[in-house]
Length: 430
Image 1 (cartoon, rainbow, N blue to C red):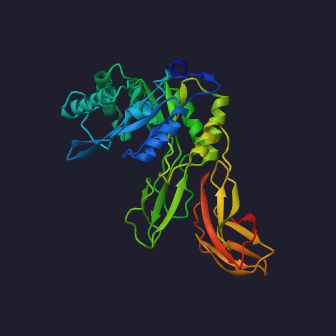
Image 2: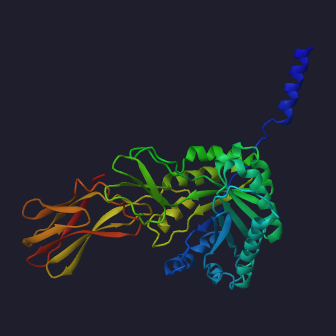
Image 3: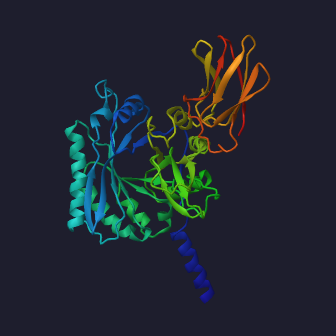
């Protein structure tokens, strides 16, 4: 009898907690972009003017909260909400603008009605008001909190309070895949209007030779299906950026930088660059276009390409990935006449993906005498008879940066006794 009872209990437990089938859909979906810059200079405004219209929604970082002795310190970003709207609103087009509130690590305590909770609510309300003062009704307030997995229940208290404070503005929270295995995750996302699953990160590397990946596409597909099981609408945050990762002379990890400026690392440090893989991200877009959970509303790209953002994709690369196409770089050699008898040799990328910077470039001419020349940007000039030469990447220059779409790099020059036509052929040396 006890065996029958045990089986009955087990069957009942399975029925109550059985996996819920995931409803799926196909076709195109919404794509948004995040603007992470703290300074809204001309390159940022130009990128917004040229490219914001390609997205359903643009979400800039508006306010950051850091902590000092348990007290919040508020840093406001001078966001130009009017620039995000641009002339599109005047033309009657639908305009969606969000705002991101970034909250640094905090250990607690958590409450919606204590001094900290009330200040967070005040900050959230002020963001909505700032946008409204510039004529923009926010489509969402996105909260990005560096919460420890053990603090999800406490974080929920904040989300509930902030949601009430900014109503009717929808509140969206960013989440990590690791949170989904904790008991408080379901209640946390239920307290928000939607969530963003942030699938890009880099774990502390063990050494400079370790294989580093910013976003694993196979894991991401599994995480997305897992996220759909919580019954709440969500988007997936996909990366477009890279990191610089540094190691000391002994191979020990020193730190990383995501803004392109190397911190005060030792002169003998080994610095690696780890980039989001455009081909992998394009494969995700293609796969989700064919089949995805119905609750997955779309993706948000971290981050909008800006000309001065050297650790980010260029715009043509993002366009290809958004369309589910693998971006392809195409390096071409170009010879420019600088003055009579003097030419410079460029490598230019005519494709939509990064092109290898290490190329073997063969130069030939017929009706003039070579006088002198040299390589540049990691290249060396080598003669190949009287009427030809090679521009070769130096063996020590293994870390030559790849050439972004539309970019050009001058790699050498040649001087002749008179004007001459120089023919260029290139071979990939990587």
